[in-house]
Image (cartoon, rainbow, N blue to C red; front, side, top):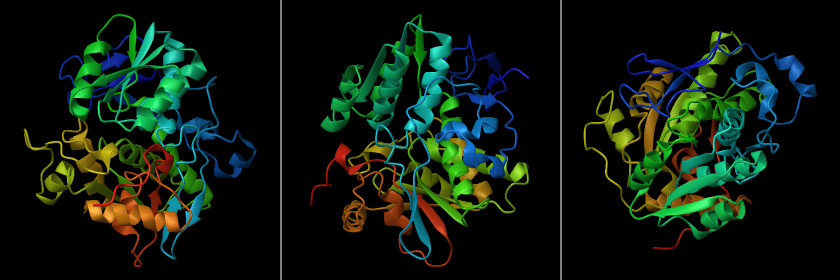
Length: 366
């Protein structure tokens, strides 16, 4: 069966090779009409040491593009809490998992240029993989993006476009550019291939834990790309009978920008119109006031039996210092889950350490 884009809101379908970057009817993000095959656990030991080892579960076969992404260590921090060190990726963030999928797709479609928007990490990842693929790339970022992240984007040869205003203004500028002829919009939010890359995070947990998953998986949530990828993987593993129980998804937001947490605890299925607003936070990577996949995120957390937690700026500062004292220097967005569940003792939980501290430095003291 040919893999196609599918709109989760209205059922519109479109060929991957010719579709626009969003649903032409509702302008919402695409899902992918793709059925993963079971991944044989016992055969994995001899496979390529990257996320492409889970080939049965991925929508792109015979890839030509890789920087050795994936296969990051899982380290116990307490008897109940383990951390997956996704900041040990080629570009120092978990976004490499999705960026390699987008760049491999773009390589096959042969656009004149690739466009991306980001608060930093997704942009650096797309820039790096486009460099590897030999594709011209332009990355739109908010004007306040960390200098280390913008330096990394430029180092990979991408054109950098600073946008006055917040993350939402940046996304609007990129989407305007995405409509130009010959452009591939490497959107980690709108393009579902990114989610099929981030789902390998959970496949790696499943492999490393010998065919099981922890009782809970905590993830930081802004646009929800890691959470939705995790939900995809859990559904696939459970559907193929490869896990007996589904873990709860614990979604973590910064208290300063937490529209999804507010909607979840209010019992809503989607964000109320105009509910979100940007606010300063140390967790810049998840400061998303109006995530386009809000409905899907809320549903995924509820169906898993999970919940939303929020963390304060002081908790983020303390968590970053605490992890550094344990030998792990993580950027302030990437410590959000440790801040939220690091003290758990009742059930096993894994937290992702998503980005390296070298990208932002230590959070400033109050």
